[in-house]
Image 1 (cartoon, rainbow, N blue to C red):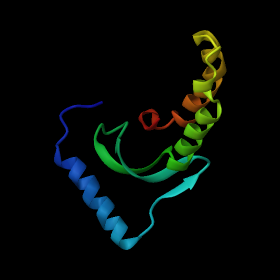
Image 2 (cartoon, rainbow, N blue to C red):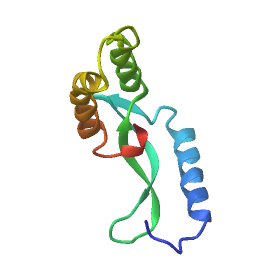
Image 3 (cartoon, rainbow, N blue to C red):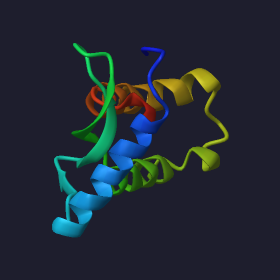
Image 4 (spheres, one colour):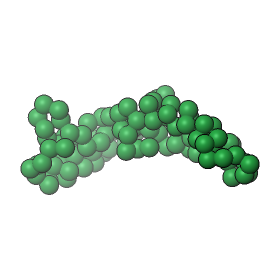
Length: 108
């Protein structure tokens, strides 16, 4: 992450987002488990922070992930060893991280 950027760049992005929301009330949408909305993004060429329209995991996808983990009933399966539980959950976690972590891994 580049250093030496002005702290008011976050404010600029926030002000730009507020102005956009006044003009367009709904600037977010969900598609294929991703939520697209304005976010602060580091520019690859300029090395500066700007306001970009980028994807991250949506709240409905996070809810579905939690529900899937809950449906495994891991707490009830006391006969399983730790390696058995890992064998059961690792494919799910690996797929979620590879699919949803591609653009914003911190959202997981």
